[in-house]
Amino acid sequence: MSILGYAAAVSASHTPALADIATRLLATDKPTWFDNPAISRRLWPATLETLYMTGLSSLITVLLGLPLGLLLVATSKRGVLANRTVNSVLGAIVNIGRSIPFIILMIALIPFTRFVMGSAIGWTSAVLPLAVAAIPFFARLVETSVLAVDPGKVEAATMMGATGRQVMFGVQVREALPGIVQGITVLIITIVGYSAIAGVLGGGGLGTLAYNYGYQRYQTDTMISTVVIIVLIVQLVQMMGDMLSRLVDHR
Image (cartoon, rainbow, N blue to C red):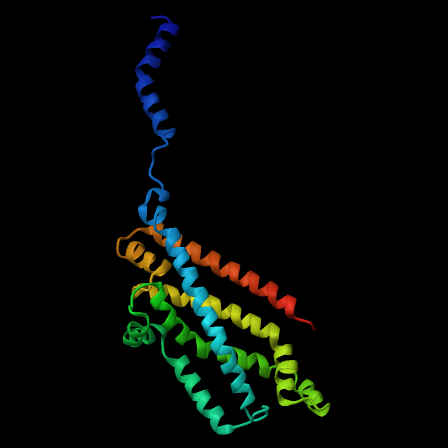
């Protein structure tokens, strides 16, 4: 047999195997993460639910926690409305609220949540316990930021005849604004973490998706996808908070 004939015979004998390898390498019908219904159909709605519950809970917390934090400052020993009794009562309430683990608080609030919201399941029902847990936490952040203002500026404003309200909002809050903005940033990020815990108890969002599919059904791709989305949300919130804090810092 000539060399050319031998080469042709070898090529013919290996053609099916080579063709099979090429087909496998070039195949485009391999399953991907996006073929998983939990990711392709449920990841985006779950992300929106997390954003909704985080945004609404954060708004409620700021609206209620900011006045509470300022009241703690105003009723403190050197505050414009110094009242030891009121300050002690408010401080005790805030400390009790901060000391209860969120998952226990959420379970304890299920009857109240069902009474107020009509249901204890879903992202709308998770808003109430999220806000209740975050209000005392944010109040302390506000108090810490305001008390960190230079006392000399407060004394200077008082000596110039400023009223208690002017001292509180014109000096203390104004000087503490960058810290308060950073506190809001920390608050939102904390609520994002709380929302994942709420999802385990039927609160909806990425937490529910990760628990039902990533944990109970051993879908690692779903678990990783939810973690990536949460990390991106936290990074975006932190970046926006840092930018806004620099904008309001007049120092």
